[in-house]
Amino acid sequence: MKNENKNPFKCIGEPPQEVPKDLKDKVMSDVNSVKLLMDLTSLFSSNYASSIESFFKTKNKSNNTNK
Image 1: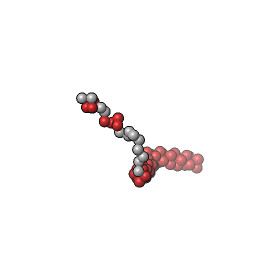
Image 2: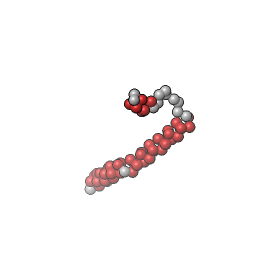
Image 3: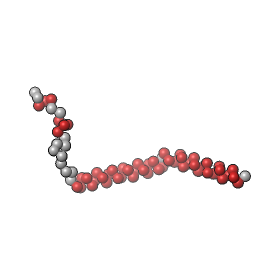
Image 4: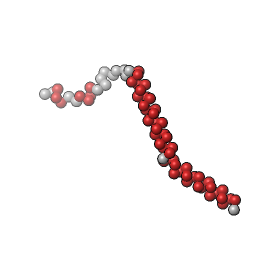
């Protein structure tokens, strides 16, 4: 009965083991790919509006000084 109440998730990672080098390299490569994708997405989505806004502000300021 005592064995049924034992939490199996507490046994995960005990004892600590070294991860294989090729698996570690693959995970880091995938993380770098996702980070690149996130950076490119933020470049073309969230910053797009502020880039257009700053462009028109600059254009309006230059038009006002020329008049």
